[in-house]
Image 1 (cartoon, rainbow, N blue to C red):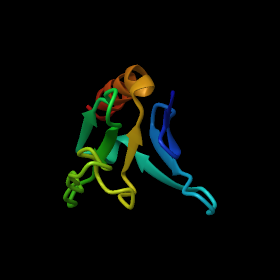
Image 2: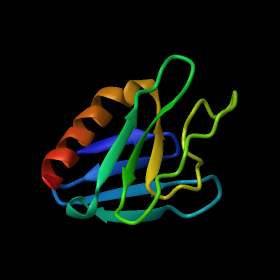
Image 3: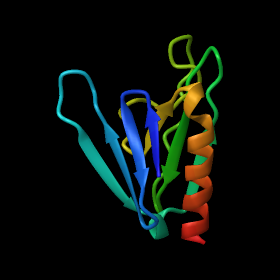
Image 4: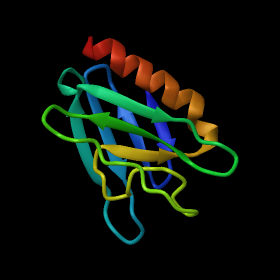
Length: 106
């Protein structure tokens, strides 16, 4: 199960979540998370004006807060390795991915 985000992708194979961000001019830096280790998920759907995001919360860590501003539109910072901004067209796929992760962790 894959979700195409803004400058990256999220893949879920039933056990592992792989977040691959592709910043301009750099090699992709994948982050792998085990679904059983996740304590929570945050999903904000994208709209016509602003991108949304998918964020995974790990034990002992505080989720990165939403940054406000006209360019950010209430998303976590791009430097957060456990989140990815998503466009509006990826809302359905992201919602299915979050539901699958929630089912796998519980």
